[in-house]
Amino acid sequence: VVLLTLLVNFRHLFYGLPLIEEYREVKGWKAYLVYALTDETFALTQQKLDMDRSDRIRYYVLISLLDQSYWVVGSIIGLILYRFIPFSTNGVEFAMTALFFVLFFEAMRETRVRKDGFASLVLCLLSLVLFPKEYFVVISLIAITLYIIAVKGGRNHE
Picture 1: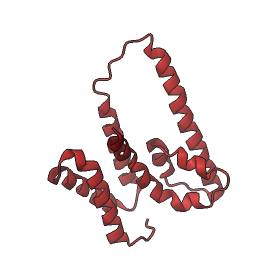
Picture 2: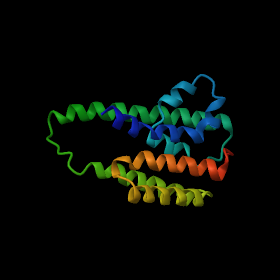
Picture 3: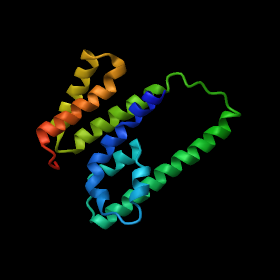
Picture 4: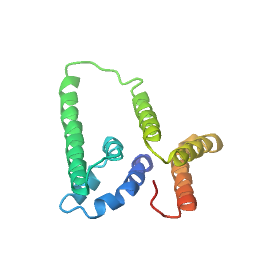
């Protein structure tokens, strides 16, 4: 259980990498922005925003606050409704996979670094085919990291 928890949350390391420069100079909200980084928040912060830096930071804070409040309020509502409405969770796991596919293809449509996205997809598929599925996530993340280091050499891109 501990290993699975670490593996699932390992993706947050990768979410944080593109935001390091954006969050570096943030005053007062940096710890909260790092804490509140979720899949949804990351997807929304990666949109191409035509605004100055101070407005972008306000946007990041607002998105983080709203996303967290949606999680908390939604969880409370779900807890209350669960007591009154029977619900089967069979098939719900498909929703996360679908969300990641939609986010990936939306990012590919909006970005100028399609080559990197395509390379990441190929590395994930190779990891899935060549290695046991229980190691798929870790091996994919390592492969993508090595690709970024080899191709980008630590340089910021886009």
